[in-house]
Length: 105
Image (cartoon, rainbow, N blue to C red; front, side):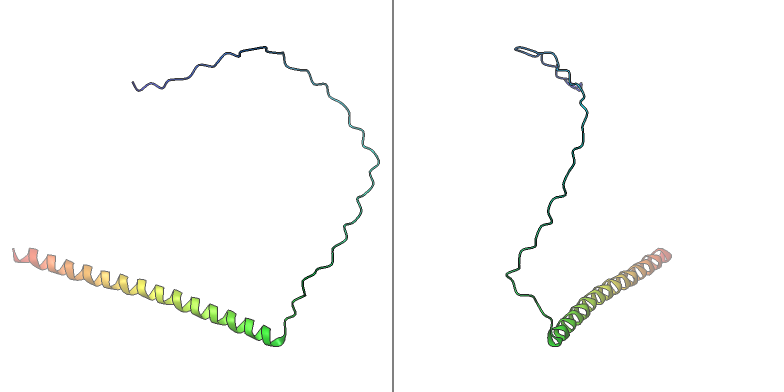
């Protein structure tokens, strides 16, 4: 019941030809000419020029993103720290309650 059933190898049917013998050949390198350098097509899109106003806007936007992400990460860290402290206080209270109950008996 627990033994695996190994399939048997099927026998080939039809005409079976012997494997062909491949003889090695020598490769003679020919004089190669380098391909012509491709010419870059002219771009139809206008080039983007950054003015001082757009650079200032980009720096301001990046600073705002960094400050927002930092505030979110700090608040998450603070939430984890407060949760850990409250769990520790609950454990101390439960321990003292259980210890005082065993002393009464």
